[in-house]
Image (cartoon, rainbow, N blue to C red):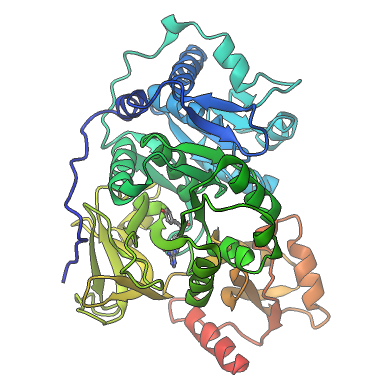
Length: 526
Ligand code: 4UU
């Protein structure tokens, strides 16, 4: 059966994203603070400033040659300038590829060699390093910093020298075709791929989330989830288009979380499970006044029910789960109702259809039967960038997106995730693609074969573990661990350890049988 949520569908405006954003921002109070830096309250933008600065930035970027169909890249920590850059890019008809600033040089290069950005925005002081990284990638014409930098122009310099005559008024976009964002996700299998999110995907995503989270109007939102990930890409716009104040934090720490909630009177915290767990275990709770906090929205990985329950009681807040994917433009189910059990990922958001299918036969399943979660909504990506084969593997001809997650729904239409059939590992909500780690490990001269799986971990959700076939018996687990250092971002390191085997179980077609390894791993823990 195809399941819909309880809220009625909403009309997704058929306009360009820049019209949608400027109209939505224009409906708010001009002089209200829209975005503020958590650590430094002197850094903020009002609603009027976002519109004006965004449009001015667009004018300068257009004068520098940013055209419809181009890609710009961001590789910086969370900052209040991000929405300005997005507004400017969208106005020019360009797409933003968001990159993790903590990636290694090879990881950044790989994304940019594939997405071919024309301009790159980095943290202040990082432009020299970025120039080295992108040497030879001829698409790159400019590198700018978000804040003042002695070696390159900053976003503020570009805004300062804008000539409004250069504003790209004549860009004509097709919202269902033209891209707004190009984040990277490994999806069901293989290496990270560019996720083509169109202007219409983003309009649908913001409109649907706003209706789902109605009660969040005029809230103060604490945004610490990274702006290179779909969760953090979506949040500032969701907040801004409903008139909230969005408090931007660069990095999660318990001190900064508690002090920011107290200082900015935060009402909503969008978290990932390890943050909720850290708060739960923290003695700092009693040292701060966090009575303003009303809701914690948690997503990106499973949330242990006992933790959720105890945090609700201890902090006197409500915790709701949201379930989303990069490929589905963020949130597709949400639990915005106190009647929904805490372990549920909620009900489908408006305009979202969900069905559960048998993994082997593809047949639709009914209540309480576990199968693959499939989603159909205007939020579903146009496809993987320059990779039609991977696209047809996950989106059927009639528009159903296969998530690779296993779950079921109960008699109330509430959904539950119980497993994942895709390769993806989630470390603290961050994506780790086993194929990427395997590719690096196979470069080691003494590794004959390798498979990486995620193993459960209370603090991080999952941690990657490598099963290695040695070429030479002298190879040690420490050597394998050391080999990964500097080759992948630190969150991808083999925290689950290294085990040696005589062979890697594979199917006849050569596919690694990860389920077998997972089952063996589980058995060994019993
Ligand atoms: C169990 O993680 C995300 C997006 C998360 C998100 C976004 C907006 C959550 C709430 C919100 O409002 O995207 P990806 O692409 O990094 O990872 C997608 C995968 C899913 O397929 C699933 O396996 O992350 C896992 N996942 C979850 N698992 C996402 N949310 C949940 C959840 N419980 N609540």
